[in-house]
Image (cartoon, helix red, strand yellow):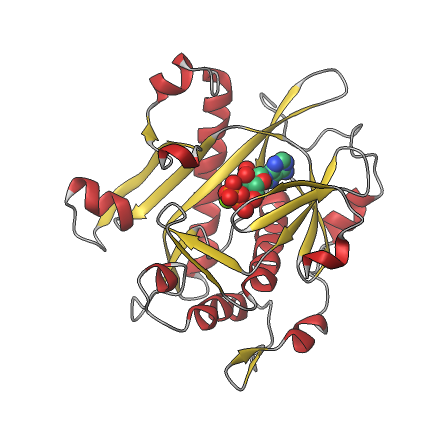
Length: 290
Ligand SMILES: Nc1ncnc2c1ncn2[C@@H]1O[C@H](COP(=O)(O)OP(=O)(O)O)[C@@H](O)[C@H]1O
Ligand SMILES: [Mg+2]
């Protein structure tokens, strides 16, 4: 698939996405691959259709967040696997929010999976594959200059807002938001003022989502722990968000690209409006301190 776009300059190929030079200055095109990886790249596979669903889910969630005033890199969806985003300087931290204990928190602290935490817990991991993305604290972050105290304060504030909003969004469709990972970036405005922007993706690749009634896992844990029906889990989340028709996009057990191509664009007035503005000149909404 990616070969269709060879004329474009590739900026970076990651584990789940490819970044290409964008259509306007200051933009990138984010291409969502079907590749899946887990346990720091030790486990790999291709999950047909994952890129399409993650692109839709992330576009939708970023648009919703933008509408409540969280500045995001998302500009607009381009096609079923690609979206136009603002180019940012990525802050090398994975910001994880946990509402319910799962995954590495259970392993590290011996807490039982499913324990409801009395308050959300924010954790920071250094984005460094060679080191397996180690857990770090605020002092590490300041000492090594990955972010300064003002940036971190902004990151934490936005992270709580995203968590509050997403908890409500998912609760409304019968899903429990167990935990998720965010990435932020820096963007400088016309007067060299700094904005902290939500970047990367929000999808079942980096959220744990359990069915509220059965606690069935519908996210990447299905892949991590060989639970089967991975794409069905992702599709279920997309269906409940209203991004995929109830009939689904899987026919005869396989993801149907043709059906996916027929899907309409994510409803996104905000993005359409923003496309018309000069990306470099218009500061995003809600700058720091306002
Ligand atoms: N708006 C953006 N500007 C610049 N870089 C971004 C932006 N959004 C995401 N990225 C970076 O692009 C990469 C996305 O590809 P991904 O497959 O997730 O990579 P990785 O394997 O490094 O996690 C990530 O490294 C992410 O930090
Ligand atoms: Mg990534």
